[in-house]
View 1 (spheres, rainbow, N blue to C red):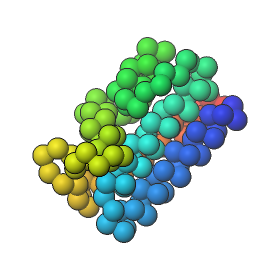
View 2 (cartoon, rainbow, N blue to C red; view 1 turned 90 degrees about the vertical axis):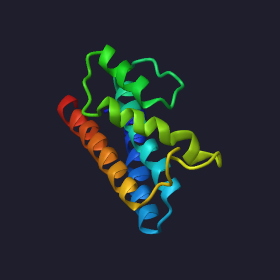
View 3 (cartoon, one colour; view 1 turned 135 degrees about the vertical axis):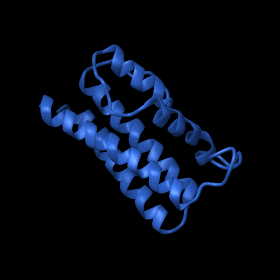
View 4 (tube, rainbow, N blue to C red; view 1 turned 30 degrees about the vertical axis):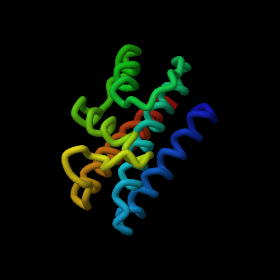
Length: 131
């Protein structure tokens, strides 16, 4: 694995661990932000490894499509991507709740963490099979 891809994957793992700690502390917005960052960085690690031009975006669906366009199918659904995209700005900046219709809670964070764990597992296994 390229050093740079390895660093991105390491950061993704740190974001996931941070999300879990933040959830334990009932800090839901930052938990969700770290979930989004986990998935973004994990998927970008594949782009870096494959030397696919990295576009400056936080849009998980766009990253998924970029991977697909290069023959890499992920285990993240479009619904997962839409959910993660809805998290990014509101969890980073005080523009209201992360989720427009209701406040994030423990259950939402737990579901989000499952998505991040699934994505990180996929990427880790991907590197295991391509290294």
